[in-house]
Length: 150
Image 1 (tube, rainbow, N blue to C red):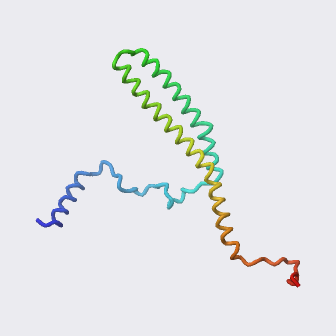
Image 2: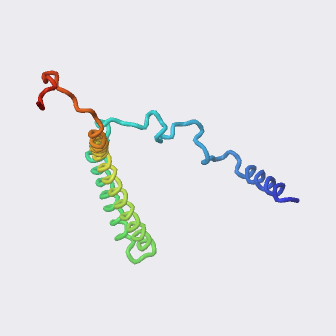
Image 3: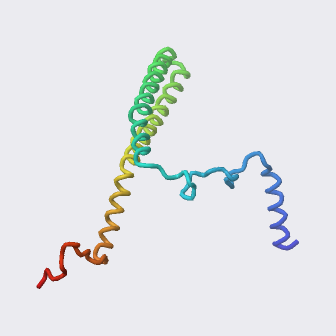
């Protein structure tokens, strides 16, 4: 059996094993949210609203939920102190606290990115404009005779 035949056989077996249970190798025609998607862009107002939602709803509510979970978990750790269950709960709480810090940091970064995006686009537009300004012909005033320099 040659390489090409064996390769074809192995690819066929792999495709058969993969089946159709889950496919992660395609979009399936659904909107991807990527740059080619017509709904990808958002207005500065939408970005501001999203940043405000993060600040006024997601961050405080996440903090409240985290505090509640910490209080409940700390009570359970105290209840099982000296048992393996207590030590396990403490380990889970430490992992939970790290995950919460990462989540809160991510929310903060996303909020800042949303707020900064409009400024970055406007700044970029001004930079591009400034690069083209020397190439533009000077506009003559409708009130000048064209003999101003004489």
